[in-house]
Length: 294
Length: 273
Image (cartoon, each protein chain N blue to C red):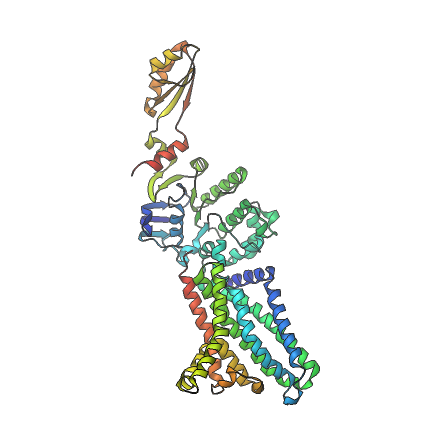
């Protein structure tokens, strides 16, 4: 549904996007991760045709980005979405329905779907950030878009609303929509998206499923061994690990060494009270990919 | 078409909520009534009906007020959307930038039409109440009405162009006021000074008429005063340019809205959201 091939964009001397190639298939949810200034919003604006790429090819359902045909099948939720404060939620969604040539009477249903039915008649000037974000989401649902481009869609949403949002996203993907969404946090998109793309300094650092990213990164696993009182020094010496406090011995090992290490620990018998296995956290994984030189 | 109307409907609603409709209508009504009252007292001996005299006064009023009101409504059209951050989303919808502007234009023009109709209508009622002969002035009043809308359209479009060039509401407001001062106040003063200095030379006969026609506000005044029976009541630049045929003035009044709208679209297309 969306393909980018060797897309490059510079603002003045600053390279915002450097040779990015990326595809999103129908029914696929792709999370775009990166710190501030990594190029997420620039990439999205290029996909939407709001700004032009310097080099590279982009196709949205086979159409040029920003063409009327591409815009007709694409929905966008901008970062910090804004609407005219003098209009009500209902009037705003009606406006966007008309722009897509849809029946304006669907506005009520759309607002109910994002949980804003009760506030539909109030002016947007009185809404909280989370409520404005829901109006933004409602307009992005208009007319069964085949590509959704969502720039930090869950900012300002509480945890319950976030869960509802990802449930809605799963529904849309099941109906065949291609979804590209950006986020700051890997923890949030884990298990809620099909593929992770990590941008850093305008370069593509990773583009795979979370499981594959974990495997490729091969980050060390941490083992925390609690020794019986008084045995900590001996445990540390035998396992060649570092002592942290009176009883805990810290070890780290590559994923494929894990079982051998556990075997060595259990061989210590009564000297060991407990073992805790800590797999690399998502933040570790994200840091690994966003910092590595490519 | 439905997309243009969607923008027009939203814009009209916003203008209603922001009290712009009320402010503009009240302004026009107030000024028209003051002129009607002032014009109804001493003109019995001129031999023309009260409404024609009022139309001549209203023409002078409209030259100042209609462009001002039009610019006040339009300067925020693009810059405001950029400031609020609502522009990127609107431009990802399957609408052209020309359609966005035209939708806003329809709403603003409708508001202007309402305000001008109320203002001129009140003046007409006031004139008819004291002088039954005033019916004779109705065609002139109608001509003033639609040519005021054309003048307003030109300045609405100019306001959009200013808004797209400035990109920030504050700068757009400043540029709009500057444009109004330059075209409505300074233009005439400058021409007058030049004509006086030239003392009937080639500037006065060759260049001056074109400079008058080149300004939509002057063309509007020329057209209405030349076409009206009350030319006698007109003075100043209007009198000095009696040689310009009304049809040329009308052409200028007709061409400027189209030209300014074209400029506005071109400026808007250069805006990167």
